[in-house]
Amino acid sequence: MRVSRLWSWFWVLLGVLYFFAPLYATLLFSLRAQRDTLGFTAYMNVLNDPRFVSTFLFSLQMAVWTIVVGVVLVAPTVYWVHLRLPNARPFVEMVTMMPFVVPAVVLVFGLIRTYAPFFTYTFVGRAVLVAGYVVLSLPYMYRAVDTGLRAIDVRSLTEAAQSLGAGWPTILLRVILPNLRVALLSGAFLTLAIVIGEYTMASLLAQPAFGPYMALLGQNRAYEPAALAIMSFALTWSAMGLIQYFGRGRQQTVELAGTH
Image (cartoon, rainbow, N blue to C red; front, side, top):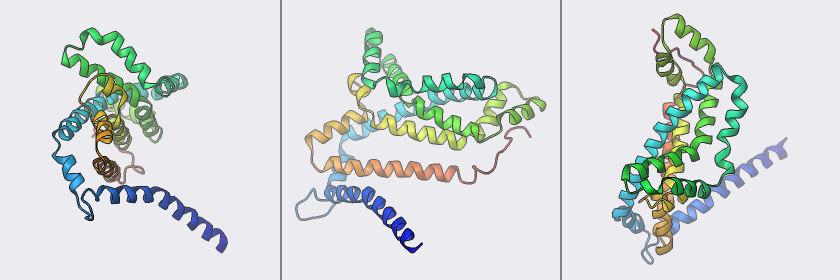
């Protein structure tokens, strides 16, 4: 028993070292922009670069639109499949797996060939980019929403809301979606991470996005890419903390929201 416990701790510590040792080395390297001095020069150079702010804000804007479109597309569809079309679930799951089968470069070349005549209009170009991001994030958003719906009694909630006179828009907006808050947040943050770091679509569609900026910075600088990597880790951990904060206590309680 003692040997088994020691082996358990050994593998835990090995996993921690495997994850944190490269992160610590990257952090230490990012602080050595000035010779023989540890400082935040690389971080200040990144934050003072106008392209950092403009590209990050552009990708953030595209991420917000992608999240909105993804939720509007996925949540009602998965809800209806759970409620009325359970036999269609394997087909829907197969469709949502297509972004894993079709490479992003194939998708973006198809978009360019189809919509290239309209790219002179900024709105059309950004709409096509958002549509491509929605496709890339579809597997993650679908599985997050599907897991959330599996955790609640969709049929009972729907029937209870209908017995109180609620229509379908009210049921979806005030009963189902509030109970999917954790699932939607998980899908939203996964989508955010995908859009912020995506390179193929953003570079080929000639948009001033954050992914191409990070790649360009890595080609021309030494310490700034390491600082940018640490900042990306910090943003990711902050997102995970927000999921835990907003979802605290939601896993064990199911509310019939909006019906009283």
